[in-house]
Image (tube, rainbow, N blue to C red):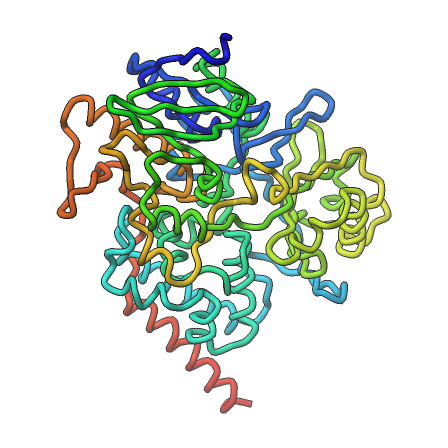
Length: 504
């Protein structure tokens, strides 16, 4: 009988991931009653950690860096210790598909100065192009249709002169989004860069998105937000339907629980939104958007050893492996020596059909071939997380938009519906740090800000009559890039090639 009773709150939040929890905390701080409905038996969404001997280790979102102010503020609020990503003064390893390896230092796995120079030139060019894209409305860019009509892979073939430089750039971009460059549009990628503030912010360790780690993992922030919201977080509450009523919304869960509120915030990946029945039906463009935004493909793994044997042998712990289709990072802390890594893109699709033991064996083999040490085959702990098999996530790190989607359907990504009663959140909707934990927090803040504005009758409309995202949420740390600088670097590279041909 209790399951059939309707619980009334002001705001219902669908999804207990980072964005949903953030919205719940913000609403609670404003004394607006809410409930957070999470389908899983845990909170955190794409932020998740596993225990090893009393220490929690991230197998989901992990790093934070400059510009991610909300994440740093929460770490400080919840008294979570931050430490820098280990950066040993050792050799990085590049492993090819056949198993052959070579070492390198620096960010680019090539000793050829012209390869490095061309990659640097294109990075500058990408930053320059992305600076033209409005952070909150990329479809309004003057070249939106043109850039959305080609894939990133196609574009890379048009701007790179050298095959090696192009292949390296392709691999780096695909790794950041855990998706093949042939499957994402150029406009989508440029907007992703814009939301982070530039290519260096995405790729760099020091000064970039991989700068810092948290003791206990980023999932600890989710657990703290859960405690802050308290029993208003309801686990094992998968939402089946959302209905617009005369004075608000009603939500029905699979377990029979019913909720009534004035607003609902849907804070789950767009791909999963089609599992919910909406009454009245969503606009067709919103439905089509949800159907055309698959998640990236990634399996994350963690392997722990008794000693940091790779450091002892002069390696940094960083590996780029074509053989397994992923990368490795040293994430050691507190006397525990660990390597964390990712199997991504098509390789992730392949290894997803294998068992965890099979993946472990292959990862050990890669480490043995790269570090040339038998200790690689004797870990004291191994675990992995296949995000593609998570039924309430469907992949990671973020939703991917292919050719033609963002310019045509993009406005419906975060557009409130039903006169503001239905709001959207989640990392995919963020104008800043899209796809990151910081972006998820930002999206939660925006949804709450819109609801507060509706309550106070201060909502701002744009020329199309849509709710405008407040400008403060769209500021980025986009560096100033000049086309002149780009051309100088390109000409220097070209001049070097000519000189190498003329001068013996």
